[in-house]
Length: 612
Image (cartoon, rainbow, N blue to C red; front, side):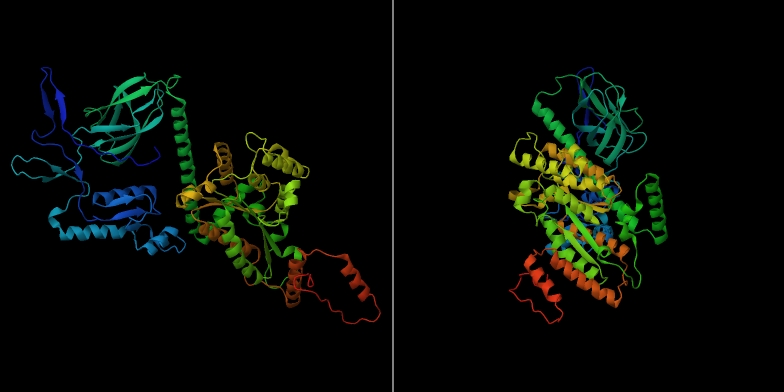
């Protein structure tokens, strides 16, 4: 029920026609020819199990059909039985491509399209007698009357032969029309003369031919009489129709359409899965478009950005906030030596996501990428800090309901907001709304709403969404980058751990889907990643670009300012976690108030706060 590929065995039977006298005769077939099965053009790719990666939709169909036509197999999932990965030159040379790395480690061959054609040509050179036209279909005839063995016959789909339909999926549809069906059979000839008829007069439209034996078409939105009709096809503009199959139109307005509640639920679930797949495809298309955008020349890219800024200005949006200017101070570019205080030399990042299913992503960012970015910032006399509230929230703060207020205040102080989502929506009020966690959450929203009044209208949302609303609804100015994990990532998770990565339920899934759609339609950049490591790479690229824009490479402070910056940075790092005791400061004040100044030694055990 969830597979996107229909596997159909088609038997090419001759068409039988009944005469008025009750006798039967063959129509359009050799009297002695038995059943025939379609076979490959050659065995050039026999033993090949190919996974297609990084190809466009039309190219994927074209190469998939070519491989299967020459005895190869095409697998949609990357498994141990795969022998070749067919991809593009860009993906093959991409050092961050996960599937390419996996293939190299597993001994699979990573090839491009020319390698497939070369293998076919090599086989044809060794078997010249077996060469067939690329459009021909090779079939085995079972005429054993003379030779006693199968014979090879090259047949080409012809408009002179009426197409035969063997199967239509689904086998029923609403009487209001406006749906799609998959049709299987033989001798489908693409062209303007092809017709597919439901009953006596209803013609299908929008044909998508996958081969000469399968296609997808649309039934137009018209009202037809409920009941069974015959579906047939024609290659000559409707003059001759081939062997039909039965199809049922049911009354879409009738309450008896669904035999049980379970059937209706199954149908709705299937429709929701289709919508989710469509959204995932749109997100993948966005990634491809952004990749093409990066390949534009400098002049073209500058022109594109100017157009985007003009559009944003027309909408009344703050271009500085969207394009990476950050807060007011961040828009100043430094060249050579400059002078500034500690308030203008720090980049603060805030990480927002559900906690349970995003541990790997957060660890990759905080433990690997943040140190790399910190080294880059140190070379330019800039501080970078990351607010990750997995740590630093006490039990007392949780009980008092001040955690949400702390988060929103931190977002106000940050320059860059990082939002991440998988399939979990995060901590939100349950439908019942009576659990202890619900009471704690409502208490936290009530406390925070005294300072952020807009929260009172969103009490049913998760804490993660409320954090993102600070940026999306422009309650605070700043930059933001969003990252969405591919839903199919869960296939690589061990079965016993998958519950952590799955949606909490239909209610939470609906809220998350709406939020993701709103984010992708906003002016903030968003990316979809397949692995936590890839997400960390995206994060590093985006933040490095932000740093390069605000603090260009080669710009540094003067010697005195640099020394002061180092000292102030060290002091800030120590004092932000220092718990002061008044008695020490009184002793220091007494010492420096004496007329005769002598050295003073501050001694104590390690970690007691002497430097702070």
